[in-house]
Length: 205
Image (cartoon, rainbow, N blue to C red):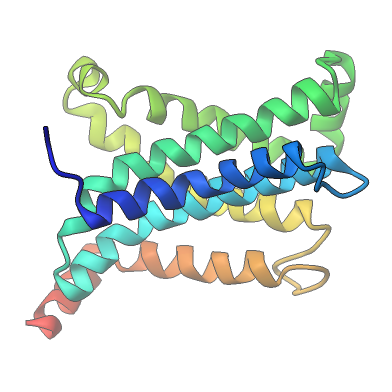
């Protein structure tokens, strides 16, 4: 039996805390007068937070040569997908009760719904191919497929900002959290640019 490492415990416990909070709030009737909105916001926030944490792993290795978190990138991504699935399920099943005519109308009318739906659909193949059998199925194309997360992350930042009734470009509305997350995503993606990454590694050495 493998001994659990502190970092492994931290990753799993930290990733499950939002779900534990949701269950606790449900059992103690601790939701606001709009529980559906609570569920949507908390699951969505957990999903985007964990996805950004998974993106932070490569910069951590580049800047500090910290290799230990690399093995948890897939785990964080799958937890992010779990919360994204809960988020979408609450929206489709509880908020709209699978009324596809209303869902179609809302998707076309509300830009945050449209970009959020597209982002989730793009996440599905990444989640499916995060396991060894999926990697073997697509072979060399695995890395190319998983690079689509670099597109998905900014899309989710827009979804986050627009859902908050804000405009991240003009800094209007409730955009502080989406703005912070957006800056982090930009930094994490910039560090991945080969010439910048090589320069940072040389500076570190």
